[in-house]
Amino acid sequence: MTFLTGHSGAGKSTFLKLLLRADKPSRGKVIVNDVDIAKLPDSRLPQYRQRLGVVFQDHHLLAQRTIFENVALPLRVMGMRDRDVGRRVRASLDQVELLGKEALFPRHLSTGEQQRVGIARAVVTRPKILLADEPTGNLDPELSSHIMNLFARFNQVGTTVIIASHDIHLIERMGFRMLQLGQGHIIDDRPAHVAESVQPQNTGEDH
Amino acid sequence: MFTSEKSPWGGSAWYPTAWFRDHLRVSVESFYFVSARLGTSFLVWLVVGIALALPAGLWILQENMLRASAGWEGRPGLSLYFSEGAEEAEIARAAQRLRDSVGIDGVTVISADDALDDFKAHTGLGDALALLGENPLPASMTARFAENISAVAVEALVEKARVLPGVAEVVFEKTWLERLRDLSTVVSRLGAVLAGLFGVGAVLVTASSVRLAIESRLDELRVLKMVGATQGQIRRPFLYFGALYGFGGGVIAAMLIAITLVVIEPPLQSLLGSYQAQLDLAGFGLGFLGVLLMVASLLGVAGSMLAVRQRLKNLELF
Image 1 (cartoon, rainbow over the protein chains, first blue to last red):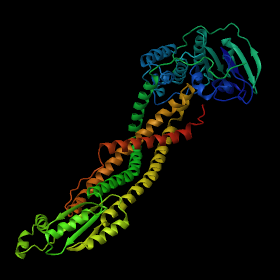
Image 2: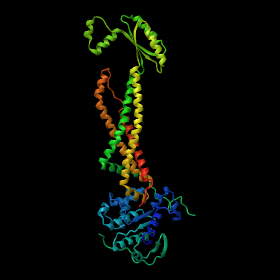
Image 3: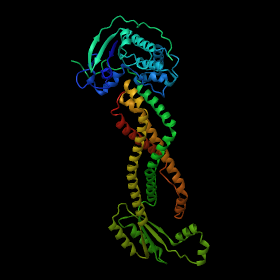
């Protein structure tokens, strides 16, 4: 698990976009598992993106679809059978403590819950890499800590997690590797130290 | 050396029935999407239906004109009217000479008595004719031309018929039939031109409607792209929209044509009745409906492909 930090415009989001192949670098390579994804043919992009999970600050949930259908979307894209979809979606919602809210629509949930639905959608495919762009930007400190602990748990089970955040205090408290960016360059690379808050904990319900 | 030909972790799990399942799901969702916006959908169906009704209606008209001309013995010919008191032997000789002529496919002799019986049967004036005491109608003969006969040969046959013994008058029966066929050709070509023009119109109307549907679902399309949907998966719902818009337009076109046929049937029946002919409109059958709906659906798909190609080609992620 690695944090990207830096001021606005430092290049955090661009870094994530390059990894998602939403953008291509003007020069250089973007190496993922020995593959230069900058040169990946467009026809291979869906395969690549199906192995990524992405979480945004404003979560991009589909308002007209239920929580279940929002989380199920990546599995539908992969063509998974309905009974497997149901099982995986419920497991994923259980991980973010939203089991039982499948039939609701995003507007019925609080901001924190919506963010957790976004996380459930990102991890439902059991991605190789989880990319998160300011995932706690709209949340209070307690809820932010809860979300970060969720990411840490996914990391513990083998998912590479890369989080862009400007919340330096939260990042330091988590104790993971931190890359500080400035004007598109790495200006500081702090290795991981003993984390304080990676243990699963219940921070209480967010409303 | 880094590779770039394959994904970093290869492909995802492959589900053999995924393609069919996705089509089924998307088709059901598209049906609900179109029916949930019935007002908008109906307007699209109406415009596409009107655009298709005219060329399709002209096709039916042309089919019936061809059928009418084929039913009229298929080819033009001559009618020969004999002078009053022409001998039967004289008429038989004339018929034989005409039968032996090159360019004549068949000859039918109608005696004066047969002509009178026919006249009585169709006019109901038998009592009035009985007062005349004698048959006022001449014997006659019809000769049908062979296929592909030249204009020069027709003129020669007309001249030959005029000098046959006992013949008083020769009428060349080409006019109405040839005019009908010429008119049928005009209708056919007009139909083809209109089909082209209105077909393009139907494609553009569908493209415009699908474009609106795309705009209303851009967020969803971006999410789909982000989670790894293929171009085919992203396009799929809109192709179904196009097909449904086209299909609905085809149904409207069929209804408009059916209504038009019902409206024109009484006067047409009256017109044909004056020629002792029965109205039997052809062409509006199951085959016609099937082709109309298929063409309409394909035009809808073409429209949606146009819209999808324009709008989704460079769809940006967030």
